[in-house]
Image (cartoon, rainbow, N blue to C red; front, side, top):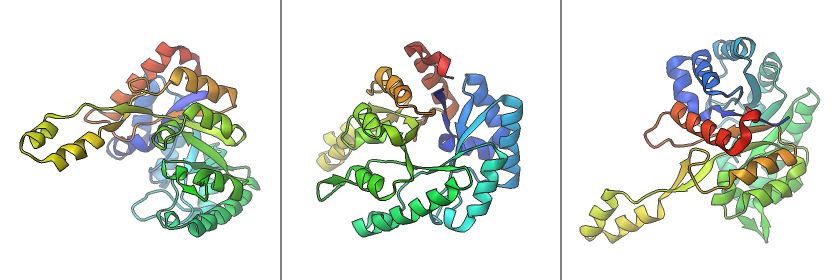
Length: 286
């Protein structure tokens, strides 16, 4: 059954300031009962707190995150350096899915670098499968760059056939494609979907101050920068269609995420997304 949960990247400061269990308790009180872990240091203490949230709050740990290789500035462990620990953590938390959250920055240099990433990721997917863990790749917009007429995401699909996809509908839309058509296109590869809305914000007074001062370049920078992340149901994406199609293709988790909250707290944003999804008729999925 498809379940709506939370992508924990947006809660990383809450985890650091308030602790993993207390933060997930607040998430559970809103109505979510599943979480995907990302950018949370997987210390022994945090793993134990996640296990406590599973046992005491009924919080499912839908997926863990890892990079292929060590990434500067990222708290996520790497499959190249921490394979055995990642597997042990997944087993301790009854978690059978692992996701790579981003194309490594070095792999963005060229098609050859992407193909090397694909080969190594596919090898990791096979190693993980032997241990009962499935590997998935999360897209941004850069995967809709074309090489010789083919989308980068199609190239990844072709050259890493044992790795599934976690489709982020906001980034699909920002890449210029229809999220619903994209979900259907990769239906047999998708186990997780990120529910993240896409909003066009209003121009600020600062932008008009720049215009009045003759700073046309500054005004145009604001004009082209009004694309925002949004609470689910507060933007322009059609979740009344996205959610049923995600169910139709067999996605296991639909994970609410908002990369920037624009002055609100993550928990406030998560409550708004929850309430909007309930109002759309998806309350039974929580």
